[in-house]
Amino acid sequence: MKNIEIPYKEERGFRYRLFEILPGALSWTILAMPFILSFVNSGVAAFVIIAYLLMWFVKAVGLNVRSLQGFRMLQQQQKLDWAAMLQELEAGEVADPQAKRPKWHYENLLRLQVKAARVKPSEITHALIIAAYNEGRDVLEPTVQSILKSHFDMKKVILVFAYEGRDGAQSEEAVLALAKEYGVKFKHVITSKHPLTPREVRGKGPNITYAGRQLKRYLEEKTKLDPLNVVVTTLDSDNRPHPHYLNALTYLYAMTPEPQYVSYQPIPVFTNNIWDAPAPSRVIATGNTFWNVVLAIRPHMIRNFASHAQSMQTIIDTDFWSVRTVVEDGHQFWRTYFRYDGRHEVYPLYLPIYQDAVISSTYWKTLRAQFVQLRRWAYGASDIAYVAEKGFFSPNKVDRWDLLAKFGRLLEGHVSWATSPMILAFAGFIPILINPDDIAANQLPFIVSRIQTLAMLGLFVTVYLSLRLLPPRPKRYKPHRTLFMLLQYILFPITTIIYNGLSGLNSQTRLMFGRYMDVFDVTDKVVKK
Image (tube, rainbow, N blue to C red; front, side):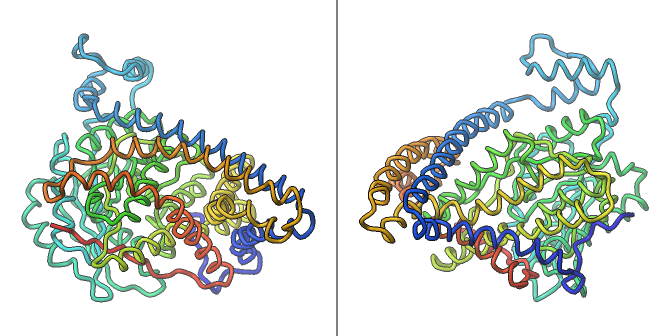
């Protein structure tokens, strides 16, 4: 099998290091440009800054439109009778002509009359891998219960608890108790205790890889299941699938002509504990939710994130997940992409996987934990060097135009992550600080403020949709708590700069200087009762 692994630190040559330095170098250069241009020519600086702000204004309008489209799609798909549609898919005909079905469902039935599905819905088995570290029963049990509430036959579900045996991890007692209590409700339950292993990062990737290998042995020794008929979903300990998730995933998988070349991505929605989280965490969680909703409307932009699904055959072909990176989810997209020479897509699944907003034991620990989480996500910039090395300098059959487009989006996305919040907030005021007597420099803050005001009007879309997505208010909170859910958006500019911008810049700067992130900073899971 071709080598799709990330090279170890000592294996990274001069060329690989250049691409690790690239995103940070670009980000710091872009942040310095308003100062440099202001010293050279204030008029040019003003023109460039206005053009940049107008570009982002257009982007903001597009994001608002797509968030509305995505929310509408999310609402529609949650109302569908997926179980009945699966039965009709299995039979190849409409069971109830009077039932209301989406147009694409009838088109799928017609397709099946021309060409049979590669895998029938009845032949599909699901394996759900729940990764745990220090989480106790109060976090893990609601996840298991949410799976059991699925409108799906649990005797076609294999539950895999992947828990750590390293660094004093604390989940073993809860995992073993839950496996014993709930095991009879599933086809099978596997408990996998991942040992501390040399040359692995301390993170989720090695944990679920160790569990995935145990799942493979079980399938080979105890069943006659074709790995292509087994769909594996990875879940964090706090991830709670929508009741229709398994049916919808089964439907989409069965309708995929070559499912080994596809990843399936539900929409992460960070609302499990949204009423309990402090205001900064709520704002960030809401922003993360809507970014994932927007991505679902732009399939060419989607990458594996958090909870995602692939066939067991695909996971075997990619030698499971990477054990050398702390961002194994997004990196799995690139492993699969290069393993199959570019024959890999991500299909959006317009159903939520409900997740926790960040809450730690104290307010200040929560603020720190939130930054650490975003910094880990931003470390996905490490994939830039990997993609360049495997795509441009290693033998492969990947389409060059497709590779260039994906590499460009990857690089631009991470550079924008680190730079756009600070450029949008402060760049318009830099020329006047350097050239206080220049006419263009004096006019620029007024123009910038008008553009920023217009752009902020789009925040009303986010506020409206966030209120629609809110779960019911817990009885322990009084009605005025809802008012705080509105007022929290005053913090939006602050959280965007401090958390989004600085987390991206932090991760890219670490890469520039070779300070690699080799420990998965597990986000605290504190349950308020």
